[in-house]
Length: 326
Image 1 (cartoon, rainbow, N blue to C red):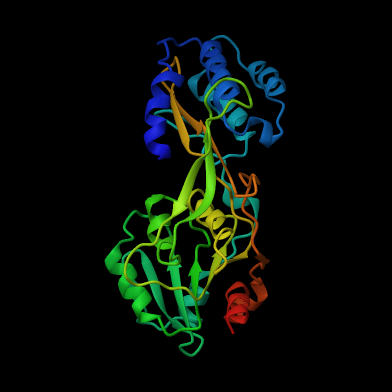
Image 2: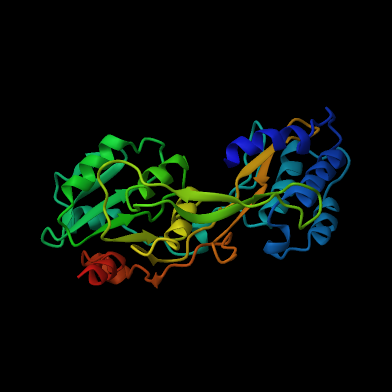
């Protein structure tokens, strides 16, 4: 629904830019676009006017493209948003949300100490029985858009008699949001509203569309209604955070690990006068209680990987999930 609505928003809200190499014009254009259309400017708590003064003062007539790019990219990174980028033919500015917290997984520990050597690989999932066959473990590294009825039917049939599932989304940087609903549809028996999104609709800081509800709808013939432990960390971003936020509305899904990296806005953008591209979040997403977790969805159970234990082959986050299922 958001994607369809954004198509019409682009036509009216994102105008075409003029072709010019004036560095001040490109800087001002980008600053104004963020000022009027970025969905999280107030939430981020930055003084956007002060940042304009700070970074514009660093520009000089005849500045090189590389230097100008670094100035503008640094200004965007003040927003601490992995969905906000400046894009040129020679570089892409980016804020790495993974560095906001420790990497909460060493998959080699899992491969060598939990999964059998011939573990199954079905579509985008690596999976098998663990804990003496009592639990099904599913590693899901990215939302690739390849989750489908066949691979979910096989996986959930295989683990139908387990005490519970562990769905490992640690360091999952996102991808195709369609996978979210394919997976969630196997954990519900009725339609469930899981969060609400709002599109930035005007230049005022509080100008947004009416809420657009995201709904988890039952899918497929094979359901899994026992407990599902969802493992996350700061590297769980974008679609990973949307999935994590949805778990808050589903009592059979429990979020374990570190706060996610956020990324709960849908990015869109355009072209600057000098030809560079840009994008930033033009929607905001709130949970059913109106909470804004753009900076990261908090876990239900906080657990950080113990590096010393990992040297001994123990994943303490995974073990915490097993304790819950046992």
